[in-house]
Image: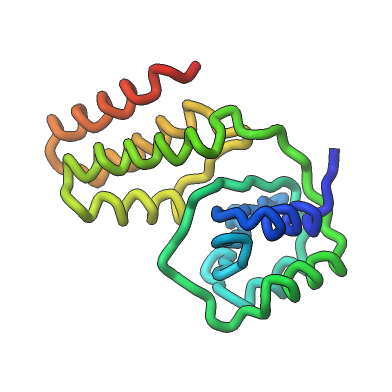
Length: 185
């Protein structure tokens, strides 16, 4: 079933949600990402492009699917973006359709708790920088499936373990993440 991108963005805006809305395109490895904070779009990225220059890119492509990961924020802000209302109106006029996905199997509140626990586990192994590294991986390198699954979280942990130099510390980190995920099927 297809859903209008305009409707998805309007719902995020009206519900004042925080997170990242990612769009996948056929035959394109880069994701188009809208970053929302309290329903407002504060950053847009597509590959190496950032901000307003990304909006022209969405005109040329047809998104195939979308994924909204709640409670993700980054420190970067696009200063050249129009207001959220204008961006949503622009998207409405483009009439882009995307595949509607099932809701997350790991719910947004659960994901926030899992993310916080992984952050603590990583900080335990590499120090305070672990929190920033986790956010960077989530935003730039990790692409979860929709619905979000335990395997997605394990894949993220596998990526993060490469930031830990000591082999024993790597094993401790992975063991802590696995223990955290035991409650999920």
